[in-house]
Every structure is written in C-alpha cells, then in structure tokens.
Length: 414
Ligand code: C6P
Image (tube, rainbow, N blue to C red; front, side):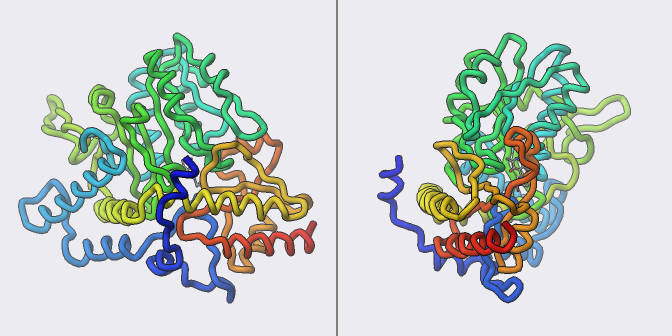
C-alpha cells in the first residue's frame, strides 16, 4: 500500500495553499500555521465562490416554486446530493440525507431507527474511543428504550480490541456503531472487518466518518455499512451541513424524526402521509448554500485525488511523529500502527491549555482539551492532550515550526 501511494504524482502543496485565502493570514504578527483541521478544516476559494455565486444569482427556496430561481436552486441543491452520492459510491441519491453535521446524523439514527427498533435488554455496541457524538445519542436512546450500551475496550496504543468486539456481538446486539478514524488518537479502525462481523450476525452498523472522509476515499458499498455520517466543515466545506448515508432498505423502514414542510406528501387533520426518501428526513428549508458549498468542496478534493491526499498526509504524519518524538518530555498519545492525519500529545510539566496559548502567540493553531472524547482521556488518565491535526495543505516546514515552538515551551514552563 505504502509503495503504491508513493508511486502517485505528488501534490503541489505550495500551489494548493494559494487556493486557501486564510492560509496567507498572519496571526499575532507570525505566519499562520494551521494545525487544527481535525476540529474544522479551511475552505478553498472555490467553495466560498460557489456559495456566494449561489446567493448572488440563484437563491430561492428549493422543491417549492415553479419559478426559474426556485428551479435553479433545486437543481444546484440536488446536484450537490449527486456529488455526495458519487463521493461515497452510494447506490442512489435516495440514500443521501442532508443534515447539519455528524452529530445530527447520529442523533437522527438514534431517534428514528433507535427508538422504533430497540426494546428493553437490546444491546448497542460502541467502542471506548468514540467522540461524544457517537456516545451520548446512544445513551439517550438507551434511556428511552431500556436498551443497554456495551463498550469495546482499547489498548494503550489506542487500538480497539477486535476479539472483545467479536465477543460482544451477541444475540441481543441490534447495532454496532464506531468511528472510522478516532479524533482524539488518530486510530484508523478496520471498519470493513468490523462491519462484516456485524452483518454476519444480522446487526445494523453505523460508522462515524467525521475524521475519515477528508483523508481517504470512502466507498460505503465496499465497506457494507448501513449508515455512514460525516460533516461538511471537516471536508473543506461549509459549517452547518453534513450527510447521513443510509442504506435504502434500512432508511425506508424508519419513521420520520422531525415533522414539517418538505417531509410530507399530504397533510390533513385526519392523517399525514410522508414524502419519499431522502426528503422524509429533511423537514423544513434545508441549508441550500451549505449543500452547494459541500458539493464544491467534493469537486475540489476530487480534483486533487484522495489517493494523492492520503499519500502526502502519510508523509506528514510520519514526519510529525519523528519530529515531535524528539521534543524533550513529549509523549504521543495514540500510537496505533494504522493512523490518520493527527498527533495527540502531552509535554511533561506543561498543561495542554498553556501550550495552546503559547503556540497561539507564535501563530500556531492546535487544539487542546478532551476533544469531546472524555472516555479516551479517562482511559489514559489525562485531563487533556494537545493535538496537531493535518490536511493536504500543511507542509513539513510548518511541522518544524511546531516542533521548535514546543521545545521553547518546554524550556519556558516544563
Ligand atoms: N470533532 C474535533 O476537534 P460535528 O461537530 O457534528 O461536525 O462533528 C462531531 C464529530 C463526530 N465524530 C468525530 C469523530 C469528530 O471528530 C467530530 C468532531 C471535532 O475533533 C470537534 S469536537
């Protein structure tokens, strides 16, 4: 795999950076070093232009008017849905539901599928490394239905215990829900194997793909999952838009979760009939500009090629792992053999929040805290970590700047 990736023509990162106006900013008098794409990536001008062009020339509400602007807006909105379908290799646009983000996608499944399917004593299996967005909606569904949450352990590297996972898939298990990539540790989970094991036992699967889609090609049919969720803003698109992929047969059997305009066919006081997929799950006026911006982001990522993106980011990750490991007192948290584009770490004697502030003074943006994955912090007995997360627009030089700043921070505070 590594050799195959290296054989691809490399990305022209210097040129790519010109597509991202914000990367030319100075922060506190220093060139911005943006190493927080895991929290939210930056957008290329193509995305910003697609959204402002839509507002300047085509805006109207979708699916509602016969007038030209409404039809143009609908075409652009539905065109974006088709781009998402292709991006995930879903079988049909009926399987692509626009939502606000990963969080809303998982809540939709928990409230619609979960509340209608789960019975007292049923089990939902998740892993110890999940983001709160893939924990709390299931805790709520368990409270509402009497189902029970089972947690697959991880080891000190941040690898999910596969044997334990298999042993937890029992006769009462109705759903297995797990991240594709951990946001706190960088671990890439073997989702194909995990889904296959669940499917063999007739268990529905949901993948939280928030940290995966910006870094690797995802094919939902190859993976075989029933649900796949991601957020536009981590994929170089706008905030406020995201996607729930749902296998058509599973979505079609689910009740709506929010009621209102656009999700109905007919409404009368004697009863209401619901719209077809995917509109049944899209009540109210959607984020039209957001979907169009997400479509433009997908076009942009496709123009670079996810294989080439993955190859460059693997180089960056290897380089960052080497450079950061050499910083005195630094310990990397999350050392799985298969990792995606981030490094979580602590520095002896320096609180991660102080580190974040010191780095900000040098123009370096990283994330510090529990990363909305408090059980991971509990597992490693840490209050917080610092996390540098990369995208294809990052450079080795930026990692050098980070490493030098970390050495100085340790000298100052450690
Ligand atoms: N993680 C991070 O800094 P939303 O907020 O809905 O776009 O995404 C939630 C989410 C769900 N799953 C994973 C694996 C995630 O990483 C995130 C968002 C950000 O790591 C903000 S907490």
